[in-house]
Length: 198
Image (cartoon, rainbow, N blue to C red; front, top):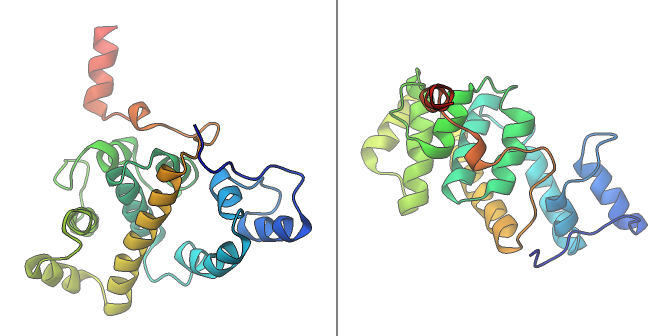
């Protein structure tokens, strides 16, 4: 049961204007943004930061960004935001079905991860989630791969999606129509087992 109901149209003109700024042209606003809009001053303050995190000024690649976001949302149990990002960005980010399944249910050492960079990002999200810190050895490996602006973006992007996950989970935002669920993503091995069993 939703605890803070997302706003429904017709919207007040100020809300309509804000929601239009937060979505691509012609796309209806998602429930998360309609929930944020219950507090319009907060939404206005958040919008520039959210635009930075999902925009071209972010120093990380689209693939980096989506690995970090998908893993963060999976670790926080936020099926809503995870589903939105998998549905809209996973293919664009070049994430395979096995990689999406690994980000959801697996670990950085899964065979689907071929590059050290991808594995490092997953390890970092995991350790930040578990300890709110990065140990020296992992930091040294990250520093060999990412520059300082990228390191800062990595840390803040992970923290930002913790905050997004807290809101989506605690307010019980319903899943967006047509987005995947945690249970719907499986590895190639799991898919083979299911096919063999049937």
